[in-house]
Figure 1 (cartoon, helix red, strand yellow):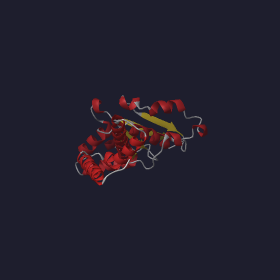
Figure 2 (tube, helix red, strand yellow):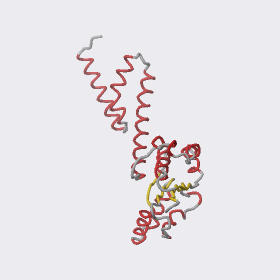
Figure 3 (cartoon, rainbow, N blue to C red):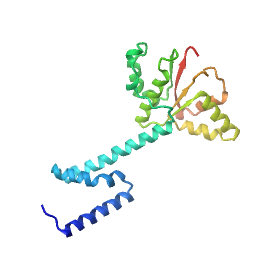
Figure 4 (cartoon, helix red, strand yellow):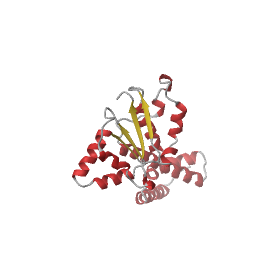
Length: 213
């Protein structure tokens, strides 16, 4: 099919209008991909409804990816670990079925907490991180911290008379992963303030505990 200069000008004007609307509506994926998906729809003889559905699905998928990346950044993981990275065959004492059940996250919904207990080097922190990454993928607000880091953060907030604000921020977090490191017996009463919230705003905790610490 041949195109005329008038048709080309009309197409360019429509594309410019779509770009302007996409910017106004904050639809970056639509703006970036509408031409390519339109060409694909033409080749595959898709209906206009199918094309529109594919375009909106691409926008939704990329929005979900951006939200997940933001949650992973906000969680402040020292490293991103996933359950696929954990070798259960090398750690036969770790119950794979239990870990898989924890990955579903119902215990977070129920505002329960989990303690992972084991010898040093058995992958407790890795599993805790991987489970917390699963929570991020489920759309949950997560924060990773060490016990010493948490204590310092709260002590500094207390000295600035901002402890209530910091505790309230943690109360809005659905899961807090606290890596004890070498500080299992670290006794700072201020740390307990994180969990002193009303029952309807309780925070789930995931704590890897080394038995030899």
